[in-house]
Length: 202
Image (cartoon, rainbow, N blue to C red; front, side):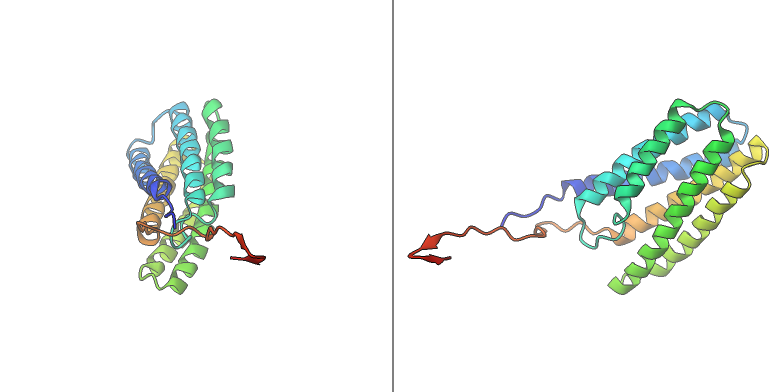
């Protein structure tokens, strides 16, 4: 039986890790330097959302062993790509819009990760409770970003930084704890050849 290639799973997992680390770094920079330009924030956030959307699509179609971290990434990946392109091509004077969009995305991801944490518990994955705690915290921060979008630019930048940092940590821990790449993984369906011998199918 031909074994499934693990290349898409490896690409998705590495991509998740890289993007999560970049989100953490960007979040730290936004917190430390809230005076950064709105256009700069828009360009980074838009590009990051679109790139993460592509990675999520790769993850969804990679069919990893547990099917936990990537199970909601088809619709979520498409949404990220669309919103990322909107923000990327219209970065100026869109601070409130950017914060609301990022807040909605982070809130949704937090809710999805809560479900992933509960599924992880059923699979017997030991760190499910940490994923749950991070997901709740991230969802709260995302909601705060949505409802506090009318504040000043520097305060919003700090809040955006906190949101990106929490989102990065959540995704990083989730993909490390729930994605298992197994070599020689069998495909989902068994391929068989049938032939007729003296009127009997074999």
